[in-house]
Every structure is written in structure tokens, then in C-alpha cells.
Amino acid sequence: MATTDRLDSCNCFASRKAARLITKLYEDHLAPAGLTSSQFALLAHLDEVGKAPLRDLVEALAMERTSIVRALQPLEREGLAAQAPDRDDARRNVISLSAAGRARLRQAIPLWQAAQAEFERRYGSSLAQQMRDSVRSLEP
Image 1 (cartoon, helix red, strand yellow):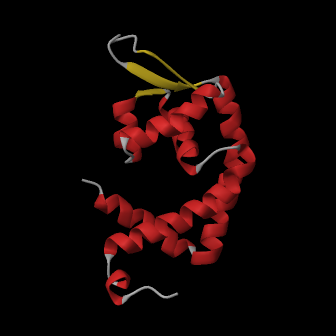
Image 2 (cartoon, one colour):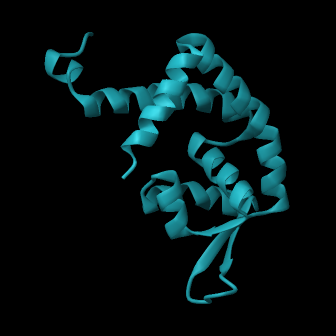
């Protein structure tokens, strides 16, 4: 069934539809590593920054706090990430990647690379770059 003219002209609908389609492509690739695309993003970000308070993850990943908490729970249960009091401010917790989390990320990176390659094969590297540039231009 085709969408209506109103939906076809809606920026929000178009971006959410694109996000759903892209997420499915990546999650199909990441499934063998047992990770969702959000969990992969969390692990990859933590691997690069070392540790981060939840507030920083919300900002860096442009995700709702509750979505990050939901994505973190299974990672913590599996011992891939951990929360601990910040050494500089014991009132706040920081999240870090464990050795098992780094190992899972290493397992997932080739799967993510395959998803990247498939996306670019399907839609072109020019569109992929344009999309990333466009998203960066939307940031506040």
C-alpha cells in the first residue's frame, strides 16, 4: 500500500522511515554478535572515550536517556559495560567498557563494516556521505 501525499511530503515521516529501514539493515548484520545498533553505538563510543556519564552519552548519541538505559541493561547483565562512581565526583556514575565489551565490539566491527558496505552498495557512497553531512548540519 502506498503512503498518502501528506506523508510523502512529511520530513518527520521520511526521516523516521529511513531510520527504520537503515536500522533493520544494520541490525540484521549485527545479530550474530548479539547486539542492536544502539548497543553497538554505545560500545563503539565507550571504546573511543574510555568512560562517560549517562548525560554525555545522551548528548553524544542523540538518544533519550531511557533509550540508553534500556540499551545498557543487557550490556551490563552480560558484563560488557559497567557503571561505577566517578572518581572525581562520587555523586555521579560513569559507564565504561569491560574487557568482554571490547572483545564483543571486535567481533561486531566486521559485521558493522559489512553493513556499511551493503548500505553503500545499495544507495551509493555519495548518498551515504551526503546523509551523514546532512545529519551533522541538523545538530543544535
